[in-house]
Length: 107
Image 1: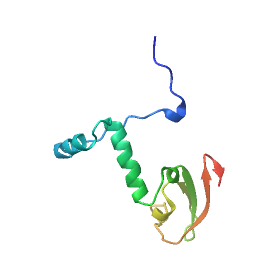
Image 2: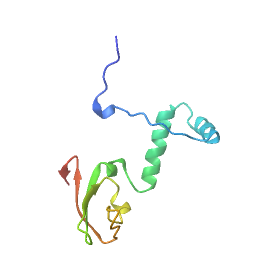
Image 3: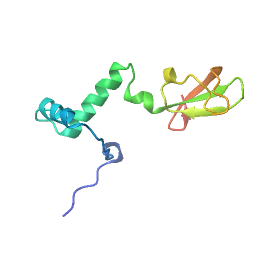
Image 4: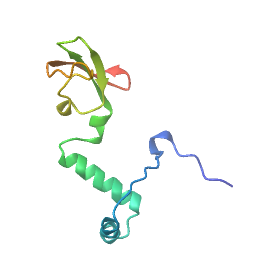
C-alpha cells in the first residue's frame, strides 16, 4: 500500500544547494533534532523576515510601466527591489507602479 497523496498546499519541491564543507558541519551542529529541510526552511523564512519581506510578498505580482519607452511588465520581485525598466534596451529609472495582482486577480 502506497503513501497518501499530499494536498497541493503541502507539496514540496526538491532544491539542491552546493555548500562548502565547513558550512555543512555548522548546519549539522545547529539543527539539533530538526531535519535539514526543516532547518533550511526556518533559516530562509527568518532571512526573508529580516529583509522586511514575507513569503506572501513573493506571491504578489507587481505590474509596472516605463515612462520613457512605454514598456509594461509584471514581476513577483518585491516592490522595493524594482528600480529600472525591464527592457534591456531602455533600463530607465523612470518607471511607474500600475497595480498589484495575486493569482491573476487585481489586488
